[in-house]
Image (cartoon, rainbow, N blue to C red; front, side, top):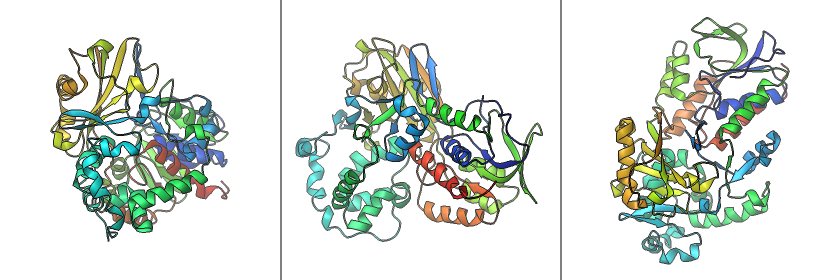
Amino acid sequence: MLDANPGVEPGIGTLVVGAGATGLSAARELCRQGKNVVLVEAGENVGGNIATRDDGDWQVELGPNTLMAKPPLYRLLHELGLDQEAIFAGEAGRKRFIVKNGRVQALPLNWSRAPFNPLLAKALPRLALEPWISPGKGEESIASFVERRLGRHVLEYLVDPFVSGIHAGDPQQLSAQAAFPGMTALEQRFGSLLRGAWKSRQGNARSETMPATWKGKLISFHGGLQRLAQCLAEEVATARHGQVLCSTRIHTLRKTDKGWLAETRDEQCFHAARLVLATPAHVSADLLQPMDTRLASLLRDIVYPPVTAVSLGFAASQVSHPLDGFGVLVPRREKRRTLGVLFVSSLFPGRAPAGHVLLHAFIGGRRDPEGARLTADQLVAQVCHDMGDLLGIEGEPVWHSIQRWPNAIPQYELGHLARIHEIEQAVTLHSGLYVIGNWRDGIAVGDCLENGRQAMGQFSSEAE
């Protein structure tokens, strides 16, 4: 827990509720503008689902496992001095595996090998037609969009496992326009995904704003991703008018003549001119319910399926697969309950004891919520059953860790963009209120960090 900064005055300019990636970034941006900020977090630590657990020589990420290097993230890490601490995933991080017909198959690292790849060869004739398919009209599910443009094989063996593994979602329900706006924008702008991807790649190469050595790299830190959350919180806590309070759960909100009043159950009060809710949509809904039932209902309609992360440690001799990649994703049609497995010990050093390997599996999601609720013993047995033959696992794990996320990843399902528009309109009725989070504009940590910064950028010219 971070202690209060003695320089904070009783009157708060902005109260930020929720110290996940979005809230941390929003509070930091306000502090950099010289604003008076108090950041409160219900949990014992900052970071939200960014959390790292150390158990002896085992180190696991309880939530996100890596960061993708992009210019906004690089700029932030450079400002924090963390660019010098960043570690890149090894060469194995470039390689992805997907299960097909009960076997682990690697996607080609070089697209010239695509005609010979079991995952892609069958799709190539259909992909060759993609530039001549007319753009769609209106909102579509990811499944509908991909099958229309790229064919069913790509949907079943590439997009379906990706959506399940990254979003824990159902491609039949996720909105292509909301969940993958960049992809649908390519279709609308260039009339073709393949043509658009090629032209965009050329443009990105010319406008690169970070070192070439960072391009396309997966990043972590020796202390895990929680190192980033801690550094953001420390910058807020040490700012002249910044304060971070953990174990502080806001229970009620009330609009006042001078702004907002937020109270905890033990009657701790915060008076603020502005209120930023950077909490999960359903948490924000509960707080706003007494004053705006419609806004609360809109937020509560955003679905968060449960996901359970199952980390398994084995002696290296127990696993015959070389684990020479980022991990393996499992298409639904393969009829295995495990959504995917990361080869954690192959990505970064210090994740497993010498002579051992660490696997990080996921179960549950939108299409199998009951899977996430299995007992710990059932979860371990299920992952070993699903992945044993694929990775050549023998015997029981020598170590395991279970992390349950009852409300894991917000689903950008059909109608999501219209819902966000309604939420924005409803929020404007409450002066000084800002409602942000990973339920809009991207679920990745990098997206949340940038969105939190941008949401507070509008105050740069205002006096406190």
